[in-house]
Length: 425
Image 1: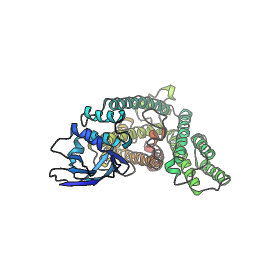
Image 2: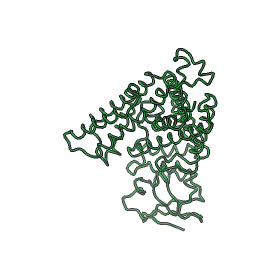
Image 3: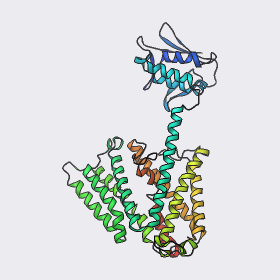
Image 4: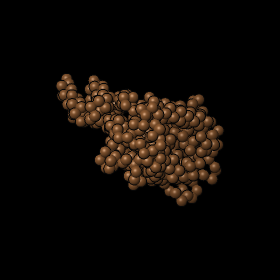
């Protein structure tokens, strides 16, 4: 069975959507890799590409180049693309005007020298380097955050305020990115900077006053007036993105201050609490807020870890289009790890007393972390970027690391404050 594709007199390549496929490169790679019983490529005198093949049960297959779908091609066995992916990659990179230059020959030689399915040494080294960076900086951040949480008070609040400021700056840069700005008008830069400063002040005001409601209302009024008084015509999109920034980057993180520093009821029903060191404030500083914060943060870490491992090992069913790499199998593994961590730590710290309350606390932490992760993924997806920033090597920006914690603080505080009798003591 033959399929003929006419080619113009000056053409030396096939244009599959936006990829140029060179006939010369096909022939050069075919002579080394394609078996004689598979598809054969001929360039006839009438300038027609003839794709001849033996009988094949698959009449139409999808052609993918470097992960992007190009088109459907008739008459080529599926096994050619599965067994020789580097041939197709090399062909796609050979542009018509540079068929015989050094770069094209290097691509062809690379496909000859690298076995199919084997990762090149350079890519492997780069992945190992990224993994080492993630582990080293992850451990460093974990130790630093652990010390800040145990210390509490103004140390915890100022550290949170610094993270909030950086996160707010990253958020407003995402809003100004091409992917989002093409569909809306972003706030002026001076408004974005003012919002970032206001967000950083909110945790400090929360610790000082004990509440955040009045300061949020005042901040929203100031930002709205600044937008309305600008020289250009104000846009509703500017107002909505600025207000969401105040809520997302400023108001929600304040609940971690209320959880860690506001719930000052002592939890002295454990040996650890009774022997809490004087340098950290003594036994009276072993509070419900500290225990709840430790359990919540540990549960979120366990949820992310179990979800990653479970998704890699068993992931088959996509969870949502917002984040294609997330799967239902990974989510269920993360839920199990989060609840298990919450229950184990509740038995260790003797808080909360009820096992059912510990299960509910872990359940709530998981869904708060998942929702926060998906929210930030949605923002980055609209912005057309992979990471919110590059502050932390191997991890991305601040928002990439704290997205799972943004909504969880409010949920954890509300659960302990409103649903646990006597704060679970």
